[in-house]
Image 1 (cartoon, one colour):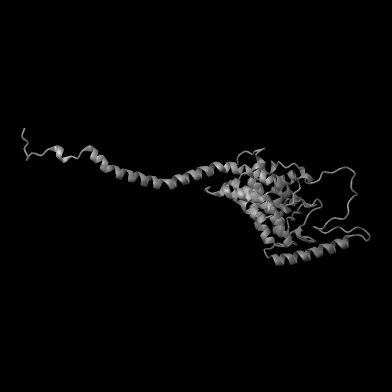
Image 2: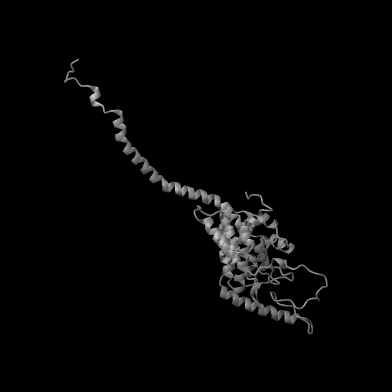
Length: 329
């Protein structure tokens, strides 16, 4: 058969399939390689994040033992690893960092972390630690005569305490005295703030203090608070307190019969008491639990400081693990 040279053969216009695939293969391989290179960093990041998220729980389990061993440096290292690659902190990490700051005797740092934990989750542990640490720092400001700063610390602490008073009835402290102090926190903060605003204060050998009744409790101002030293000017208030102390001392001396024991001024140490009893008493806290950390070392005749000592053994999310609290609504 003679082929017509003018007739178009479809076979002549289409390249062989094998030639098509051979021409397209280099392009596909190059595209796959590019996609693989582009996706590798994302895969590595996802893998690192997955490992970090898994390790958060493992690392968090180390914190209780490190806190019990008073190893603040180890807690710092653990918290840094938890923070690495983790998007933001939860209230438990902030609470643990507050406990770490307590071990360093860094009360301002502890308060900052406890407040962050409370703002993140107003559960009982951060609420109680925030309120009690604020009270401790406020008392320090009172002793220094910085009454305005003391009020600024007490006001949010009282609001937190009043926000859920039930939290302060669930202390797991072994000391009955500490449990009582914790339970009285909302009322005690309210009394201190009222006395502070009314200027019901006195000067003692250890600095300024609240006027107290014979039981050592804050003496609330009377309904008519005239004669006290209210005001926002710390210098004027300190001067007023000195004058009022002198007036009370003179009045007490004029009312004391000659030859009798004078009544101690408010805030001063009482005179000698009865002879020590032969019955064994309970030390506070248990000497076996004493710590060289200043904030965690008890001092005599300072219940609030000793409450802070007890916080060294009870603060932190792990302290509530054995006696968990219901969620706060």
